[in-house]
Structures are given as C-alpha cells and as structure tokens.
Image (spheres, rainbow, N blue to C red):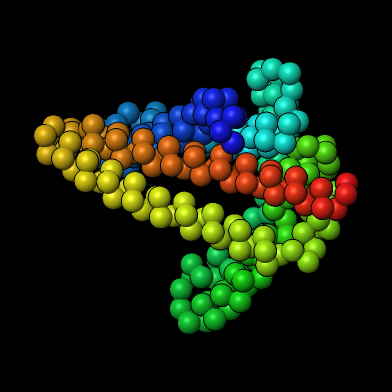
Length: 242
C-alpha cells in the first residue's frame, strides 16, 4: 500500500475526491440557495455518473496495482480500468443485490419491517462476504460477471467467518478514525465560520472545509477497501493453488 500511495493518491483525488466534492457543492447549492441558476441542478446527474464511474475506475486501478497486474504505465493502467467499467458496474450491482431487500424493509420502519429486515440483513451480509473477491476476479482474471461470482463463491467457501471478522475490524478502525476526524473538523469549521461570518449562499470557507474532509475520507475508505479486497483475493487464490 505504501509503495503504491504516490500513484493511488492522485488517481483517487481525480476520480473520487473531486467528483464527490463537486457533487456535494452543486447539490448543496441547489438545495439551500434559491437564487442559484436553474442550470445548476442539471449538473447533478452527470456529476453523479462521474462519481459512480470514478468509484469503479479507482477500484479496478487499485486492484491491478496491488496485485502487480498493472500495465507498464499509469496511463495504460487507467485505460484498462476504464475498459472494465461496464463489467465492474455489473459486478458491483450483483454484490449489492443481497442488501436491497433488508434495506427496503428496515427503511420502511415499523415492527414488521424490523423483524423481517434484520434476519435478511444478516443473510445479505453473509452473501456479500462470499462475493467480495468477485471484483478482483473480474479485474485480474478477465472473468465475466457470472464467472466472477461463481469463482468468488468457490474461493470463499469455508472462510466466511474469518473474512467477515477481518472486514469488521477494518471498518471499525476506519469508523473510529472517521469519528475523530469529523469531530476535529467540526470544531475547526465552527471556528472558521465564527471568524469569517455566514456565507451568502451557505457555502463559505467552513462548509468547504467540512465537505473536503468528508469527501477525502470517503475516497480514502474506497481505496483502502479496494486494496483490502485485492489482497484478500490474492491470499485466497494462493490458498486455492490457482
């Protein structure tokens, strides 16, 4: 991870941090400033698409780089990452499918939704763990969506508990970092806001600071998770001897 950071950081900044920050800016302006130009809301859809595509590009890029499957140059690796975007979107969609029913039930509220949603959430998380290596299988082995899912299922057989524990520890550590960072940022933003005064459109220096830190943390988490899953796939593949 450390040796790849000089390459990963600018790519994550360009394809994750910047689209997310612009999306937050345009979305925040459209929601809070009635004087905003009507055309500003039109930018939301392309910015959202750019953020989604950027997420897949960075995930593929980080996977190839972490597993030593990168192309001779950064440009060639980026080109390969963009070429895999359609397939990467499909794999990501399949991975998220098990969580959709419990998410709908839990969001609906009520006792019935909770009673039905919690068991489905546990099942969905179990399936998600089984499908974690599907993305690197697709990126490194050039597998199709169905093949990637089937191979991921085989690689994780009998290892779900350990994989879930490792992922939980990683997310817990990042959650603690997130809470501390956001708390410190909130204090700093409050001080900046008190010094600079309220912004006319609600997006003064304090809001830029908060949004930048949030987007930076989101981009960092995406990179860390991508590298984690890539290394996990590498270990599973070595253990399977294939």
